[in-house]
Length: 314
Image (cartoon, rainbow, N blue to C red; front, side, top):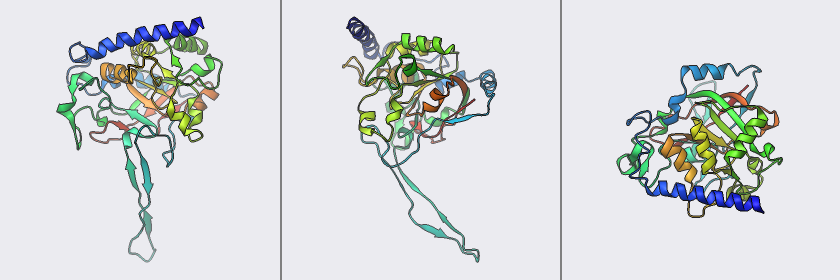
């Protein structure tokens, strides 16, 4: 009971501190970014040639783990987002060899459904987004004129899995469990792994086991990192944070007055990307805590995010 009250008290203090930051969003100096006032890549700038070579050296077994989910009808989706795929008809081409082909029509918020990579134009504080860009200046009906996903570039870097579920001795963290810096540090110590600048950090909560099995429970709440844990990762200079849940961060936030504060802290304030709805179960099963992380966002000019299937190679 004491531990529970202490956690709630700590979360409230952190939440109030962040709220102050949110209220100051248009006057405090979280912009321009460390990479310059015109930067549109954020923490992707940390992936240097040396970082790529470091990741390459982690490939020692030739084992490839697919971290993405299948895009299909009925998959969990946030809010009113939707997805459908249709094969309109078969098309024939003239020729004695009877050539014939299929196409598909895909409808949906393509950058924000299924396994999704959140770009810097996805989430803001008031009207301000990464690097102090005002949405009135760059968010157009035809697409974003700044901070579009096409600016990120290919990502090939060292990946780290933090298996918080195993550290806590469970197969799945409880609903709305807030992962703390102590949880991250404890799991990293158990795994004998350190986070380095430019890494992509993936968090295994066990929540992904509900995917396409209990979609209602999957989308209702989720365990995830809180503001303090997110700041811990920011201080480690990570490039992106991913998880086997739908928001990476804990939902709902323990401070009921806050909505998605981790998204604001990572994306808007620090240019750190989020990778949501990942399949981390195989990595956790095989105790793979370091690997080469590979992801190339689709070059959807002006999009807020990207679908795709990231890889972990060991």
